[in-house]
Image: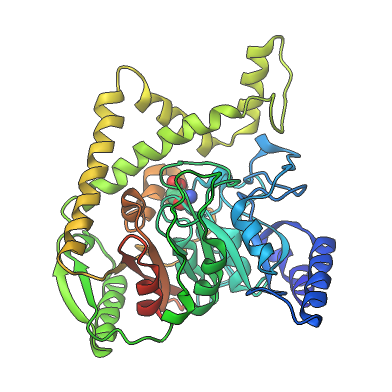
Length: 451
Ligand code: GLN
């Protein structure tokens, strides 16, 4: 009830929730109370959570914040949310996001942008909460839930966490089941939590993670007690600092924050080692080939027949065209066009195949660093703090918006886990994060180091 009141008071300004499931929340909370009264109960008993609109929730609004999925209410529940409810968590509602998780500012949502609860010192300008999981980050930061589900294809958990002073972890590809998560780029998509602090993130991920027969890319490895890693000493851990993340034009404040993070870990007894990940600069362009390619294929299913919106036409082809033209926003249309282009017969080898080869090289860079004994890698996560909603420069040039993801997409290309942890405020008083990248299934080391 307290969280529903917070939502009622705060959501008008923040637009973090696109659907509030108040009755369902109270019903789930009551069942939770009853279990607790009987001395039963799971790890998340009674904990109220928000759910990114990308997760299928049975009988409840699930539209990936797209017009094309108008009115879609799945007849099934995603595995990740099923796991959370099985542990006793309570659903408050569905959270705003960039349409189909494509974006870095939550501005491509059909429901309009979510708003960052943070403001720059002395300014009333509305800032983005990051994207695509902007609603998740804004809701956690503003105490409109105790934690939220999110997804990360190329930074969508970690960048919004950094922009809102929250913690977000993108686990190893295969750690969480993708079943019931609306697909963007299937070889990159992973679910994970956004939470108030590292401990909450550890508890939430423990519940979300599982092997799942319905997702053959989920991996059958025991899910460790992540919470046990919290507060463990980092003495003797080897932390790699990759030279290639010192990109041209890196703002002095971000560089200073990074140095401060290095010093903190050094003071805590970690061994700092310089490493090289030589193919880093190709990660962003390769990502923006692979991700749209997979998206163009995944989004072919929205044809006006099987789901949501249907705009009639004189025949079936015109109906497809009308439905897709009216249903997809401009960023999604751009991705579909880029994706079909790089997959087309004439360009497949030059773009898509080349990008896949680059992907292998990026993966090998990381493998070499870990083979040399590095336990985790410390980098910046964003090239700036939160920017203004409607920023003209970013709106005018999509590539400038894509450059927001320069530090985040690398590990998705390699399938590795990464955590974004609040590390300070900039001169405007806005939160900044740092990123730790881990070995495959090295989430415990990330929680240990981040905490
Ligand atoms: N900003 C990136 C994109 O638009 C990442 C999105 C994501 O991780 N879902 O593709």
